[in-house]
Length: 193
Image 1 (tube, rainbow, N blue to C red):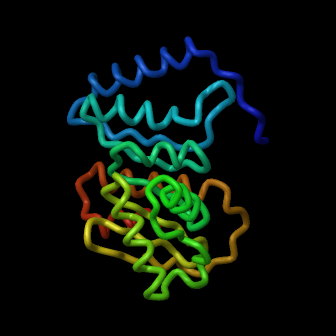
Image 2: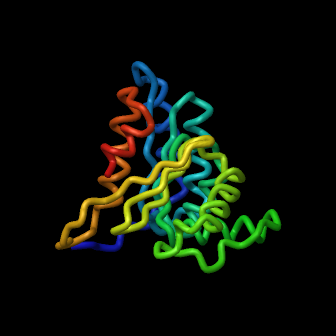
């Protein structure tokens, strides 16, 4: 069952921010924080941005896996990892094109993403983001990882899905686990997939 969450009050948001800082400060060996999912009613769309900035100020490594406005606004913070799908990446690109006059990401989808002109667009857009490792998931076609000047393509095994709910969460969890354990970026992608 997927129920609508509770309405969050401003006081509860402050408690969350304070608890986040306390948990990061008390972590041994550094903290990796994954900000993921939709946000409950009562929170501003920029909540992930605010939380990521707070976590960064305490020295945490930050991952983001969300959608819509919370994802787009969260991408303005410094991230070690972000995981939009191809549709969400298009929304990010559209936002950047409006904000920074960049070329639109118009017409790029999972069917034509591997065309050289489209890969060039993705690289151009990814350079405008404050993300060390940008993963664009492509559903049954795997995922692209842009890490600095390197691009990796993880090919997904062919399976007949029963239900895809949670697959993105599992992907992020696998990447975070490998990253937290000091694995190479290519291994992080492999474990995520």
